[in-house]
Amino acid sequence: MIAYLDASTGSMLVAAIAGGFAGLAVLFKFFGHKILGVFSPKHRAAARAAKEELVPADEEQ
Image (tube, rainbow, N blue to C red):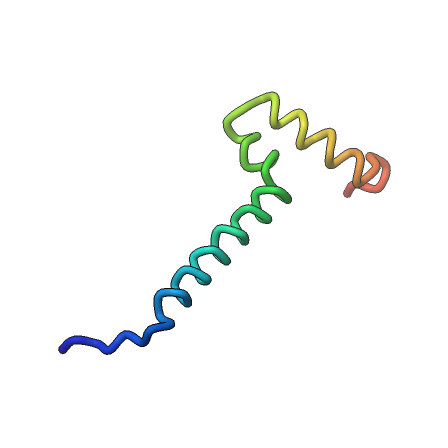
């Protein structure tokens, strides 16, 4: 059977896709250095520096 697609279905799909990309962008902004640190020593050092800035070394467990 052929499903009925309302006129606003296309805009709902575009909004869902745009929301997904926005979510991925925020995720990458928060965890970008950790993700890239797997592949690059430069980003690994940047992630370590950011962590030390947020959590002092004496408070780590």
